[in-house]
Amino acid sequence: MKQNGIAPVLRTGSSGVEVRFLLVAFNKMKCKKCKKEHDGTFGSGRFCNISCANSGRGYKKGNISWNKGKSSKKIYYFYCIKCDKKYIVKITENYYKKGKYKKHCNWSCSNSKEYDEQLKNKKRIATTKYIKKIGGPRLGKHEKRILDKVEKKYNIKIIRQYHIKEIGYFVDGYCKETNTVYEIDEKPKTKERDIKREKEIKEELNCKFIRIKDY
Image (cartoon, rainbow, N blue to C red; front, side, top):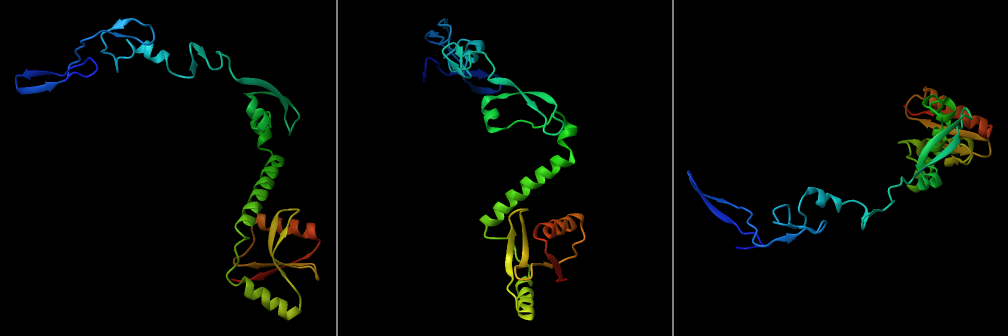
């Protein structure tokens, strides 16, 4: 059966009858790129060879490239936020407008303690937004019962899951009358980050900090 000028041909071999499809061109075809006549044996028959086939690919408009052969990246000069040293960055204008470029001149400046603190603050703000989105932080197993007992014992009102906006922390309970923060610990809080968190909360609210063991 003839299809697009190509027909299958039967061949017999020594081991029996084999069916092989040989490309037999009945009509000459024109290459879409160079307009030369060819027998249609290359690929689908639209092009005469691989060079003509590849020339029609990519970001092309006619015979001119979409960016006319020029790079879309530009050279910008910035100052390192750590050491104030001038450095060069080659980025696109879109990345420059969005602020997607390195803020330091080298690796040692980007790994400084000051930069680490900035990253931690950014992560803390992002975490706070996520906690608000899901309806608040996770409550401890006996947290509600323990704080209820404290309220009855001292006849005070404790705000549950109080958010300290200035430093981005949530505490289990906070009493405005006595200016006291209550934390229910389900396990020992002896790590450096826990001690640092407690210190920051005390400095911000100028309050008492009471830890109640629940383990």
